View 1 (cartoon, rainbow, N blue to C red):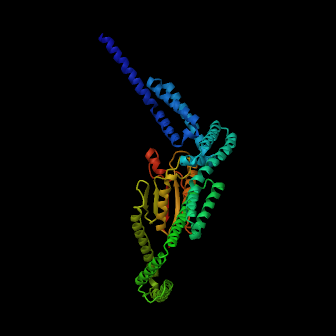
View 2 (view 1 turned 45 degrees about the horizontal axis):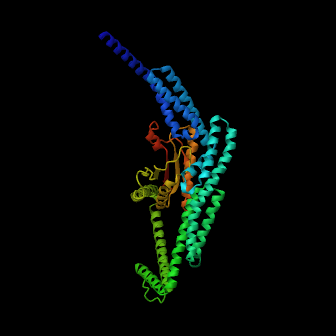
View 3 (view 1 turned 180 degrees about the vertical axis):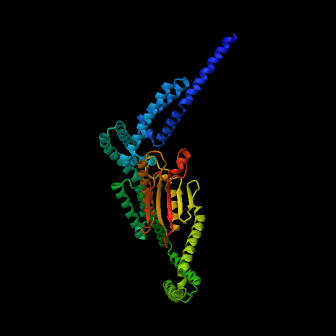
Length: 474
């Protein structure tokens, strides 16, 4: 009896050790495949190569079952099959992103649009056409894929046009219509005309350039703002018409405002007979002040020139000291502004950095692009708008938008992707800033990681956009 129990125990221990060493023998291969699987999922293989991705998952699951059963040879074979399918999936994904970027990004824009703006039938057709392109790419039939991509783009364009009119044109139309009821064109013709012109510009973009949604967003905000101003002026005009005595109240308020301004400048305006005369007296006083300041500046310039002539022997040292003082002052100013900037941002969204050269970096941590895409997610517009407000605080600085990726995918693939993403953010900033501001974009691909690409959290940190505010050159 004891001999039988001992024999069973020995068989159990032998089987357990066999399974353990079999698993250990496959551990490296299993780790490699699972890591590759994670990379494929990050690259959206389930969307862009569903067939190869599904087969890879199935083979990986079989490998795990074989390992548990102690069938190492079959496990290795399934792992090899899974690895091969993953390679095919990643190749198909990169082909979709690099060969059909407009198609991928048009679909992303549609999917990120609020469903209330979309037509279900157009969305369904667009998805069907997109999936046909994916099938042809997986099969390696690029000629048919390119043909089908044209149809898919047309369907996506139709879906976009419908949604964009609802999303960007309609709000401006409704505001203008609200103003029309108040006779805003009569009371505020300039603001009303500007709102109507902006609406027409959005309609033109929707028709001719539906991918320029960032610009539409900016124009729609401006159009609504102009229409709201027209409404406010119309309401005031109607109120004055109904209450004529308000004219005197407004006039008194204007006189009081000018008197207060004159007092601050040390100018007595009590002798003026009208608001117009007050304004003229202020204008003349300011002109006299400017003449006085200009004379003082001229005298100062002469004095400085005289001192510079006497101190010519120290010119090199003085220039060096002045440059050092300039850089120190720039850094102090930047530090002071950064203190104020921290109130604009959630630290989980944006990290603000000051380099040793006093460049300011706005690291957009929550600007998470979809894999293989350069479409700015609409839910990050508010965050980028806050970045625009920050840029305005550094009015003398030029701007460089830097795009960075993690190491998933090939070098050329990541380089091109980072360039497209930085260009997209540059376009957004230029739509919001004055034309006089200089904005450049550059993509660094995976060249400048700030964290370990071997971990999920590290790769998330490396996928980033940095907006760099450059120190002005002396």
